[in-house]
Length: 219
Image 1 (cartoon, rainbow, N blue to C red):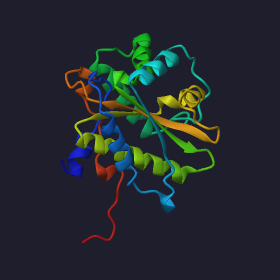
Image 2: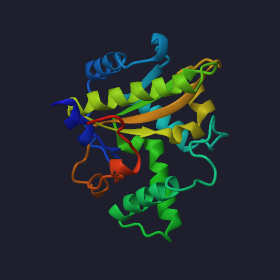
Image 3: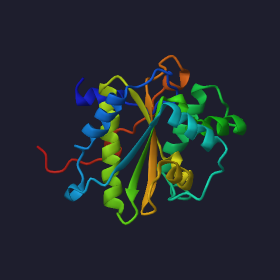
C-alpha cells in the first residue's frame, strides 16, 4: 500500500472486532512511528499501550470514575465559522449513520460514552507529553500519532484518535504510573475494524482545497 492510499483509507473507527492484536505488531507500530519528525528531534512523545487483562481492568475502573477537570479545552468556546459548521455536520453524519435522531440526547451521550470502552478495540493507547513543552511539541506529538495511524492502515488495522481522554487525566495517570511532570494528551483505539457496522460506513467530509489553500508563483 502506498502512502496516499493509506491516507485515504484511514478513518476514525468506532466499532471494532474482538480479534486480538499481537504484541509484536503493537511494538512495531510504536517503534516505527518514532521516525515521525519533531523539532530539534526532541521526540516529545510518551506512549502507553493496554491490552488483555490490563485493558479490562482499566475499563472497569473508568466506568465507575467521574469525569475530571480536563487538562485542556479540546475545542475553543463558541466555535466560529467555518469550524462550527464542520463540527456540526460531522456529528450529524455520525449519529445519522446509526439512526440516532438529533433530539435523542440520551442516545447521543451513550454513544459518546463508548469512548470509555475504546469502542471495544482490543488495544487502547495513551499519548502523553512533558508539561513544560509547548504548542510546537504538541504538534510533534500529533505527527507521531498520525504516523502511527497510517502505519496501522498498512498493517490492516484501524484506529480512532480520542481526545475524549483529556477528561480523565488523573485516573489515567494513576493507572499507568505517569509522573506528575507529564500530562495525558490523547488516547487511541487500535484493532481490526468491524467493517459491517454502519458507524464505519460513512466518511467525514472535506472542503475543496480552493477554499483553504493558495498556490503562489506557479506557472
